Image 1 (cartoon, rainbow, N blue to C red):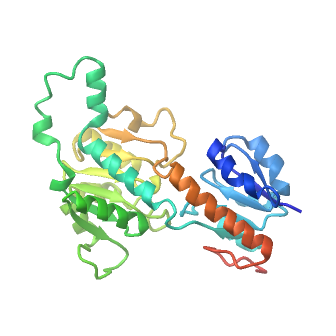
Image 2 (image 1 turned 180 degrees about the vertical axis):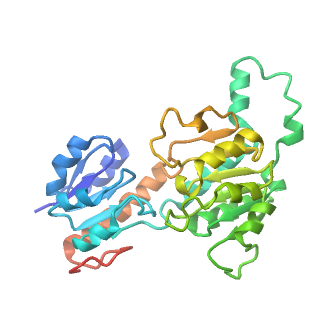
Image 3 (image 1 turned 60 degrees about the vertical axis):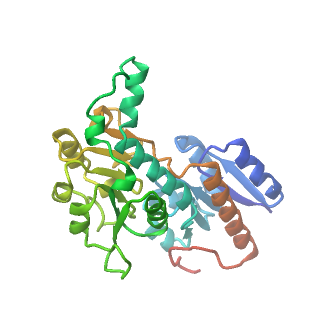
Length: 318
């Protein structure tokens, strides 16, 4: 009997082509993240969920009577009720490092777009205001190679960002929970004060929620740029909006937000000094192939009774 998988996203042709050779033993049911009717119709028969972003609550997990594995396509499991999964004997696995190349490149993209005022320049030239150039560009726009880049968190993604911006000539600092002995480590307050670009690479936990609040943002240089490709709630959005409006920060590049999808009245949407993308720095054909390779491999292990890879909990009875 085929292993039933509920994949909580809409596949493209390349995704369908990738899983097609496994169809003799893997029965994948695709469901858009905003299709609750489809999700709850398929959930009772699902043995595996391939999870992306839509929160997976304890109530959801209790409806999955046959569930054995929730496989996060990514690293952060903050949108999964891991405690309930553990109590119900459901393994929760993730894919550490699988999206690191794509998110690292997306992070640098946001750095450059914010630092070089890309959205504003694009709008100006489309509206016939591109020439003569704004003299403020030569006074404020920076090269990454002339900046100090501070990385908050130093996992797989941050290390790749460090390699890229160092190759561009930047001085790189980083911080983590304690001094890791690596060159460039600084306590968070010192890193915030010294950096021209601050880039966030943290999981969302009780300890990291609003880690960058008003006091932390006030430590940053007024001409600094903040980039967040980790989790939106690591930053106090209200405090960030105020800093961007009042000149406390020069710009921000954001791929993540406290509430997703972003509400139409979110004040960030009205700021010219913010570059926004909809939580997609990870979303490339290359990352999807890495995700699917790991997801199918773990399903095969589940089918064959082998130990699962990258399990983050200890489910009861397993």
